[in-house]
Length: 336
Image 1 (spheres, rainbow, N blue to C red):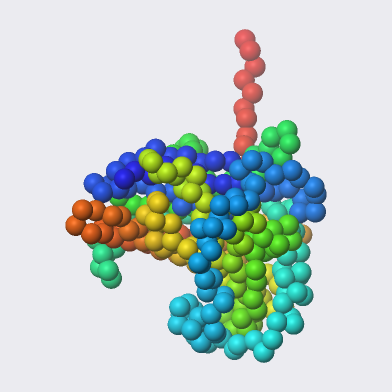
Image 2: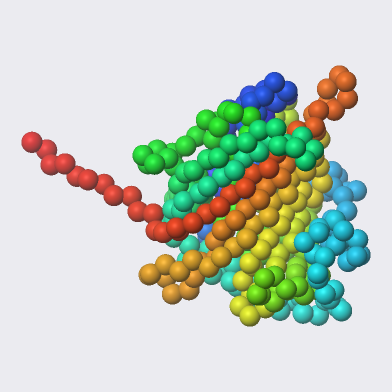
């Protein structure tokens, strides 16, 4: 089986396919490519942003983990072991309103940025690491505009200023990106596309946080992680997750996302992403931008083979530093 992967909405990122069974494997998992349109402006969705009604049928038997009792959920998500469960859901509307306002503000004020990125990519067999490599590059978050809209996209660039094609990572590892825009699930524009639950309060380092779980609504969500294989096109991946929100300023300081359900059509059995956000203060922007500092991604692929199943596991660790404005300079050479 071979893979082609597209990230939607926003600009599509397509990579060349290669064999999964023979390796090397290249799989691009790109989270939500968030729109930079003002959250309260009216904007007609493009065709790839229209909710897929077939999702309702596929996810009919899906059970988001936010529906589980807190004790069981803490076993599923070990990071919740020290949570103080919520007594009721009355604080939820205010938390969502204030958090959504911050996310809206982030997308209103985000500028073109570049950062240093360090990646550790691993292939796993159980708890054993069977392959490992380290990658350093420049990570860009830029606004790309067309006549009718403006989208934020993320990509990588080498030290010479050349854009790195993800298809170049053909060494048996997975390529992952798209973390700076992950908070868009909580924007005021997209909150109606998910169901939310206030799980409780938790100490996260020095911060007191609200813990909020979410799950996208099948048939209503217009943001997808979309995968295509050699014989299956445009498989939409809906997500669920948990956010830790600082009680003092309602900023998302940590976030975890998981698949709402496995998608056997493209052999993806699990995708867990954990992002820690930190404030970045730029000189010409009054408020800090909350951007990824550390990211951990775990993926599990289960491929059917004549003898049963082939299970492949991958882990990527990303670290970002030295965020700064990205400016393209053009040197004009006068004609002779």
